[in-house]
Amino acid sequence: MPDPVGRQPLHLWSLSEDVVVETTDDAVVLTGRFGTEELIDPDPVVREALRRMELGPVLPANVRANPEGSICLVLLPTLSRLSHLTVRTLGLDDLKGPLLSVSPESRLATFSPDELEAADEIRLPRDVRVTLDAAGVALESAASLHRVVLHRPEAVWVVGMLAWPVTPDAATEALPLHPEVTDGILRYLVAAGMAKPVHPPAPDADADS
Image (tube, rainbow, N blue to C red; front, side, top):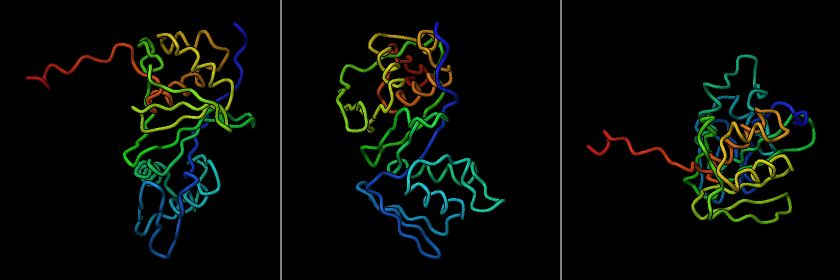
């Protein structure tokens, strides 16, 4: 197998292009096509993150409003609340641009790229539409609350594997990508509804009793 290309994945956040941010001394108000969110007296690290996210994708770990700023305990829960206003981007530290981006298509959109089971088969759902976009290849589905754009060939390679049932382990073995890159792309696709288990988990027996 060829040597893997690319390095460690970067999980980036930005505000959707339509989002307008207004700040006052005691609040930050974000307004977009899916409504308005008001943050009362937000932590300085939240203010700084949103300021940067207006300009483009940022790495939350790099946001420091002050040396004491908390990232995980303050910033990430707030960003999760703003999922319907936020674009999630998966990139690499090779300065060649992002791999893919996931945009919300509903106020109900939430995004959580959780760990995948290495031996569980997944594939592209039948209703996913694949079209050309100015920024790459777009994936859309009426059953999904997100829209995905594949910006680089590496992401397209992974989607190509999903034309048939495949396990994350098998996809990793077949592609000339760093394992964490393949895993990251698959996790984003699953979280966006653009890849689904071939055999969904059986309902919990206790729930039916």
